[in-house]
Length: 257
Ligand code: ADP
Ligand code: MG
Image 1 (cartoon, rainbow, N blue to C red):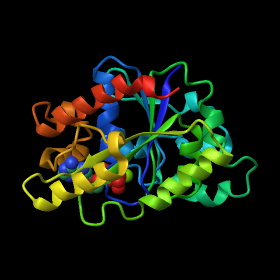
Image 2 (image 1 turned 45 degrees about the vertical axis):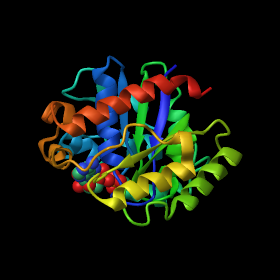
Image 3 (image 1 turned 30 degrees about the horizontal axis):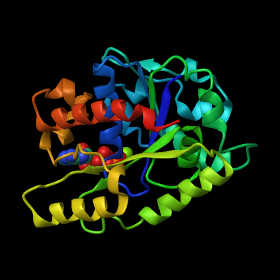
């Protein structure tokens, strides 16, 4: 049975989508069958793997709100082993529409029951909020990866996220674990970057991945070409570290029961 991991942090711009796309592509390149699920109405993960939002007739919205079977919404990408359930702007209405639905936090979890056997990893890119879309993602997941940007106030807001994780564990998904904390956009030339790494390690200890994502211009260019970094520029530092991260995630597979 595949492992389902959410990439979550309610702060915007911390590297959730970049990490979702490139961890998925890294895992796929190492021979794993991977399904990426875009749950952000902005659909950046969708376009980031080269899927044109204008061409998709169904997206995660139809799965969550209309109970369309998830397998009917899967789109394959140009990468071997990597499929995606896309998001389009239609998803923006889901937060409100879901409120009136029974078991509204369980929709994604139910939808993935049939799919978990088909994939080695299912990676869910969360929106920048702790609303019903993120709750659905956390409820459906075995574990959560928290990206933390190496910037001032890196830890700010994390207690809110950790509190939400605890609430999900208590009421919706008692098996949810913290898979790891991923430091992103490190500028190793600055003292600030080094200080933030130390601060986050002090707080999260062995949960922090050894792979630290550097600030790398190629990573920010790749989405506009609709390509994960290992296709866009396989020799870049960004490609190298996301591949390292994929290996680290594979090795820690046993940590989650
Ligand atoms: P989130 O999904 O958390 O909002 P994104 O992954 O979209 O964050 O990243 C925010 C912005 O920063 C995007 O423009 C992205 O291309 C850029 N970015 C993300 N990670 C890096 C990195 N390691 N180096 C340079 N730019 C990055
Ligand atoms: Mg995003």
